[in-house]
Image 1 (cartoon, rainbow, N blue to C red):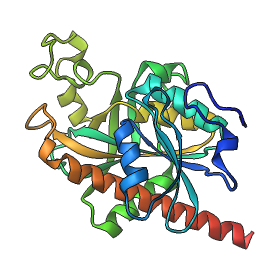
Image 2 (cartoon, rainbow, N blue to C red; image 1 turned 90 degrees about the horizontal axis):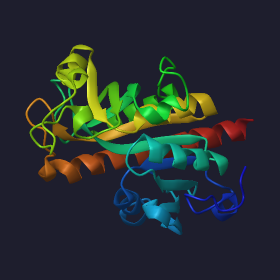
Image 3 (spheres, helix red, strand yellow; image 1 turned 135 degrees about the vertical axis):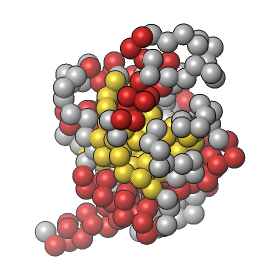
Image 4 (cartoon, one colour; image 1 turned 180 degrees about the horizontal axis):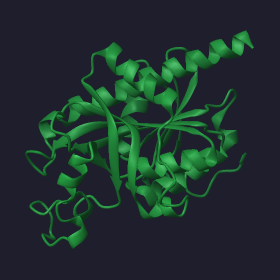
Length: 270
């Protein structure tokens, strides 16, 4: 375990206090991390750990007084792989990604959330972690905790397989909103192909996170706010963004609190 500040995240184990958090909520957007840490009821900000490289990180307490880390991964698998590696070095053993996505499945609309049970991983960073055929699967216990939290909070939710890809435009078959309308042959029609494979949504980080979890030996889950309905449009529906993001944040926090309480009960019995 590394006690000195890590090069990219800007803090080490010694900055996390005692008891130190073992769980992190991980956001691609530094503003979402700040919003959770500073503006969310039931969350008490203890310390801003770092704003280095835009990878904003915060130490917070939840309502039960248990510490939680709020961290930023940046966009895409390469950035996430660096942050997750260093979070593991400072003792984090459970990670819930709180992200955004575009829906592929016909029954998923903007404003809801998608909870990933696994990922189709089309990401170069993940290939440095494990072979292509290595499964990119979410932790079942964290995933169930997210589902139960969504039910409890009455947040519209879907459980499915996520397509994790490296690019927002070409890789997600965007041609109308992209500067490049010309796709490689292998990407032409890929959204329809994924829909036939019962894939729920597109995003850019979960596959790498899940493979790292399997190889490193930590628990990982992912919940994404649906900001685009790819059955109707390539564009983000900005009017529904805040509703969807708040739903994902509340579900993730509720699940984190439940996991911490469960861990506390188990420790007490032991």
